[in-house]
Amino acid sequence: MQTVLLTGFEPFDQDPVNPSWEAVRQLDGVQFAEDVQIVARRLPCAFATAPECLVQLISELRPAMVIATGLAPGRSEISLERVAININDARIPDNLGYQPIDTLVVADGPAAYFSTLPIKAMVKAVRESGVAASVSQTAGTFVCNQVFYRLQHLLAGSQVRSGFIHVPDQSLMALSSLVDGLRVAVSVAWNTPVDVREVGGQVS
Ligand code: PCA
Image (cartoon, rainbow, N blue to C red):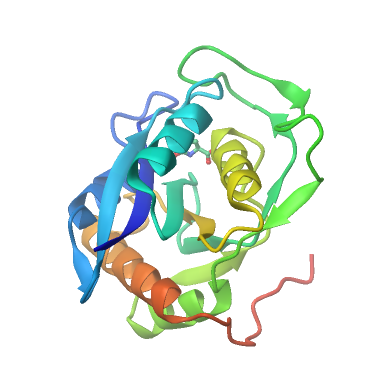
């Protein structure tokens, strides 16, 4: 059996729940192809501990694909992140009270990494399933971007494809739609070796 590791985050910034974890936990154990199953795990919302936790999970579970998710407050669509950047610039302290400003995620790392997931195909399929989705050109500069960058750094050059999805607030998308959309996104990612060519950019 092969594993797709799907992560969500614990709550942060005084929110009682984080829909990223509430959604992915519902997909834990779901088998979406004959020999592939989702394993869902929760990451802490802290710069110091989240990447270590993810690295540990990857060495333990040896996943064939990794998709991390987190909440993007205010966004109303499932956001397929295109790029992780090598900067931490926190607007608020994380759950351990740490607030880095303009520090590098990896001291000698490149400025950015692209997602290695077929993000255009994923957007297309999620939309066709009736759930709002789009490509996002920035994962921000907080813990999610840091985790995304560390993930891409760790798996760069490997056969294991990986990326990040930001999810909407529960006030802007029902949890059931989010779960359905993520299930489609994972399955399409698994089944699409080469991304499709679709409009998905922004003018500014
Ligand atoms: N969202 C935050 C961190 C944890 C989460 O769910 C972010 O976008 O960085």
